Image (cartoon, rainbow, N blue to C red; front, side, top):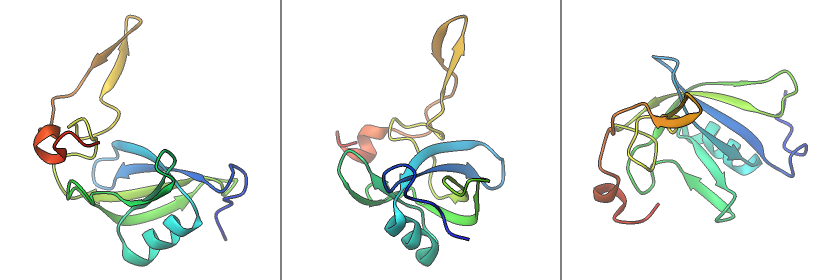
Length: 126
């Protein structure tokens, strides 16, 4: 069974979930090459839509994602990647998860504590 990268112009959404806790950590996109590299290396690689190139998650921060399991949805056009996160967080804003905001009473509120200082890790780069 192959992932269908053609439905969304060569990309498939990749939901990243913590293997141990089940928490959703982030959403990224993979093209066929990123998916192949992820499978071959055991580290999650995405396709950056803004930079138009592959990026190994953690190449700047060191906070890599070790693949534990990969699943696809029923249409084979999205993947779920269960990972072990190396480092305190995956979000470039310093949180464990990119999903750190929660809608409460019609307003987005920060629901988590920062896991690390993004300025110290990225030096102003995101």
